Image 1 (tube, one colour):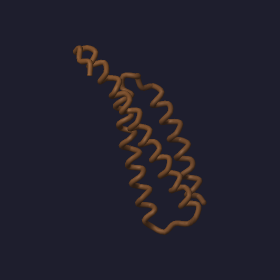
Image 2: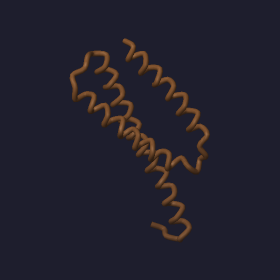
Image 3: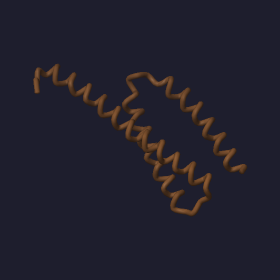
Image 4: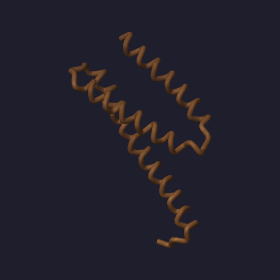
Length: 101
């Protein structure tokens, strides 16, 4: 029971620390930040898969499933947003060079 409480405390603390750190990032650095969060979410997915490779009890399996689901959503959303941002820069470059493709 102590392990679950400790994990929950770490989750809450990382949420607040992450929110305060990301809210202070200038808009110019959002694209590199998205790439880094995609990498971190990928590591989270790998760690959760490693946890699932061992037999766990019901509550731990549910927490692991939620972790994998949320990290997967974060990776997919991050790649979608990064792709949109890169398309915006690509259109600006085409307009500057006079290319009308």
